[in-house]
Image (tube, rainbow, N blue to C red; front, top):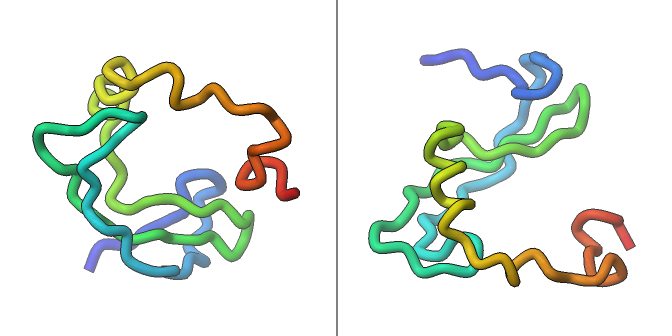
Length: 85
């Protein structure tokens, strides 16, 4: 079995939080081929939560380039996921 470390701090103190379903939407656009699901992993050392397996930078860049810019137009007060309100 492959050893997995935190993508931020490198710690091996990670916990699988749960499964992430495959997605047919990304950045406000319908995809022609779904992104395969994976697992949500949380680092016990630094608290970062991340997806595994991760998409490559090239894949992510392509998805974001094709995304709908209006997807990210939200007032700061509506970003509870980011600001913890």
